[in-house]
Length: 433
Ligand SMILES: [Zn+2]
Image (cartoon, rainbow, N blue to C red):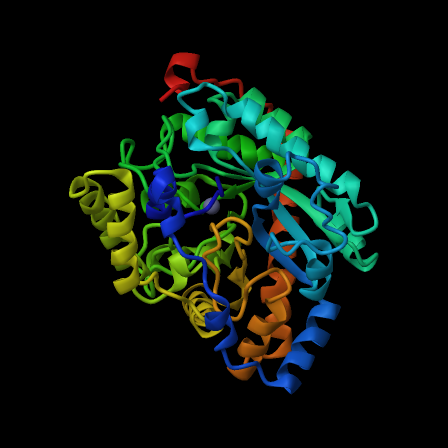
């Protein structure tokens, strides 16, 4: 299952007979978008060839595991793979100089006691994918690696673990993930953990527990970003109090524009300058489309009503399809995504915004006019149209993330002189849900 679907899409997908009821954006919808001004698009392409995009979140590894048997060569990423939103020619066309590949750890792995195993499988997938295409991809662990690999014309490949359940309550596991190249960990996915609440689950801890604070402190000491996408707003605030290093939101948009729990509230955006971190705006219409939060709420009851009122799964599917025809999933355009960037710039400042497209992670829920990883120049052309300067756009494209990563690395180097590895661990019983 894709990693970043909204809660409701996950719920729909969890009902296999209704899976087909979630429509993908149709070609006509994509075709109906006005093309960007050719002069602005050319300027955006020039700008991004100087300072390439560093994207915070892409779920290609999960897609390779789920749909191509985990064989990166079977996906023919070098030739172009239309069944995916990411392949090598389109990474090149999109000027993606660095990508945090998501090592997504399913929430189902928690009751199965298999989260660390799943995380290792995903990390291994990233390693094998990068090894399979050395002409286009190269492993990166530092900001300096990113700049060197970008200069070689390849895509620097970093790893972000999506879901703090991956460490199974063990700081030893966290340290070993760092050694495997993990440079951010999203503290939760959609399930509340014994030490941190998820945005889309019930708040059981009302923030970070003392062990959660230890996780943050150990990430600071190691030199791994704490990623606050997917956590509750209370956890966001607690982490910003506890951390000694910049944080990131690897794929989150602005809650003031779409009141979805996955988006970042204004008071948290205002805390970003003091922290030095970066909010990497998510493109998914499920978080950026006008009315997405209402649709999310309504589709839940529509699905339940369809199931309750039907004599058979087929009838339920027909009823749900009928509802979907009259209540289409909200769309987002390039302009909607630029609105979220504008808002983050307004509240957090131009130094604290980036992009986290969430490609191959939303079950095909894609912005109109930006269907794949070749689409970044279209967004930057729109930002140029809105009056952003080249220097501002270089920050959004990648310089902000590079600055935050250097700062994070410097904090780690300093802390390693004065702090020893933390030895606190949650007992296995407490780390299970
Ligand atoms: Zn996600």
